[in-house]
Image 1 (tube, rainbow, N blue to C red):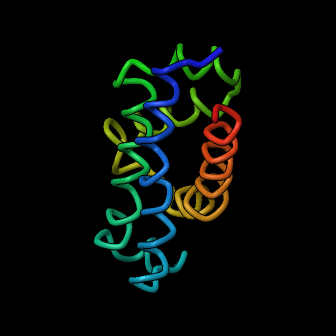
Image 2 (cartoon, helix red, strand yellow; image 1 turned 180 degrees about the horizontal axis):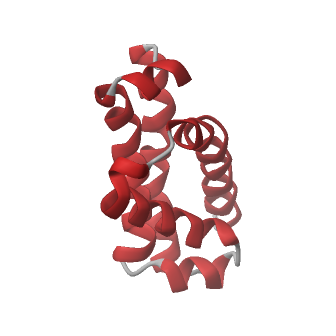
Length: 118
């Protein structure tokens, strides 16, 4: 059964996932420079924040869970909250792993779920 809200969220989320890897490549962002330069950190964080905002703040969480129950949805919203309310306490190494491992995994999941719905 098609879930239009989940599909809409995935379609909005996919370019944000792509943006993370694109920014890393375009600006030559490394784990070291996001740890020492907030400009690079912010370039990576903004689309990650927007992903979490879509999932939780955008009201799509329940639709996503219905379509594909997974912890990744609550993790995305949880990280959004950490960025918004604990920016100064963020650990750059965790953000780097998120940007280079978790976001590409999320991108693959979005593509798979969208493909399954066609």
